[in-house]
Amino acid sequence: MAPREESAGLRHGDGGQQDEARLSRRSLLSWMIGGSAGLIAVVLGTQLIGFAASPAFEAPSSDWVDLGPLDAFQPGVPKNVQFVITHRDGWKEESKAASVWVVRGNQGTNDVKVFNGHCTHLGCIYSWQAATRTFDCPCHGGEYTIDGRVIAGPPPRPLDALEFKVSGGRLSCLYQDFKLGVSQKVPA
Amino acid sequence: MKEERGRGFRNWLDQRLGYRAAWAAVFERSIPEGLNWAYTLGSATLFVFILQALTGIFLALYYTPNPDNAWQSIQFIENHVAFGPMIRSLHHWGASAMVVLVFLHMLRVYFMGSFKYPRELTWIVGVILLFLVLAMGFTGYLLPWDEKAYWATTVGTNMVGAVPFVGSFLEGLLRGGPSVGVLTLPRFYAVHMLFLPALLVLFITLHLVLVIRLGISTPPKAARQERLMYENRAPVGRSAAAQRGVRG
Ligand code: HEM
Ligand code: FES
Image (cartoon, rainbow over the protein chains, first blue to last red):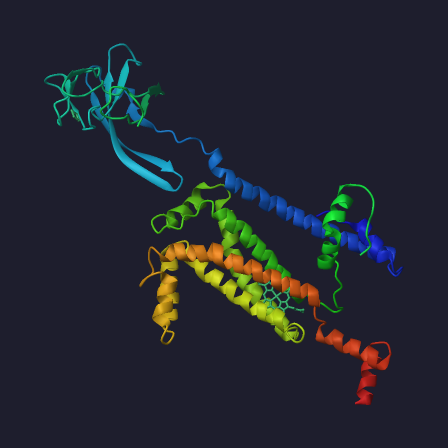
């Protein structure tokens, strides 16, 4: 709303009654009103736009899970780690319990495998059998070697290895579930 | 108003739209002498209404009128949306401000006698607006779906239930069932953000058309002085008043 003092002046000057002082008072007021309207529009406008655009600036939720110090895992001894992951989609928050098996080899700090805790057949929770040195699934007799290869039962693919990283001596993994019962590893 | 000819976008637009005449009719109309700040209360109400409409439209981006999620969606606005607390507070306090302003505006109109001929219709439309504003407050109060909202609405709709004969029917109509529940929230939401705003826009427009068409009423004091001026053909002032005293 730009003050239109020129035309206002034209109109109100018609009668010849108005003096200069009155004209400038009028245009000062209209500048003040226009200025406050503009200020409100800018302040409120930026907030409203920020409000509306807010989700677009949200970093995609990352499900990196801290699994603790790497030293806590001994080479050749698979260890189960359980945790709760919270997935947020807008105001909808979903928490679920999940677990992984961490297997360390002897070849240094990067010789690590992190397996999703679900059997690739139909998702049961398998566990490490120290006696047979296999991962056994209780549901339909699935068995895997220490590096996740299937050696018995119906599982259609090896255990699902997860992305992991070691930083500052701590191990973390990108927890992910995959489609069950199929031979390809496709994210669920 | 004087027609401005010539080139330029504004003139081009004005020759087709006539916006200058419209602008002048609204913002450069003559008003009586002796007005004071109380005469801005209607405009203040209008300003807050526009603010409510804007912030309300934006809040609708996140608010979810579902009993399972309504409360969480508001927590989300409060904690995760940029400027969320600000926009929500504006709408929250604006609601109270609007009710206060509309009453003050009505009091000004009442005490200045502005409801008299020819402004009775403006007053009647105003009364409709008053109820619409109160209804906005009542329906909006339920939407946060917290304990206070729930019980306030239970009590409010119980009161309607006390109406003779048709009470329980009205209560069921408002609640969408025998008690405040799953159907009540979407009902209040729809009424709050669709039915009532449509009616408000309609009646505010009518109200403003009437205000502009009839012009602002002259305040009693200025009107008295004007009358005196015409009666006595004398300058207004203490002497004029004295003269009136002499004439009885
Ligand atoms: C949404 C609510 C309302 C809005 C936005 C509104 C707006 C306005 C505006 C902008 C004016 C011009 C003069 C002024 O600002 O005082 C006005 C005048 C008037 N309003 Fe309202 N109003 C509302 C509610 C009401 C109510 C509740 C009543 C009375 C029951 C009422 C009765 C009148 C009357 C009679 C006038 C003419 C006053 C005169 O000519 O001096 N209005 N209204
Ligand atoms: S779920 Fe593991 S073998 Fe079927």
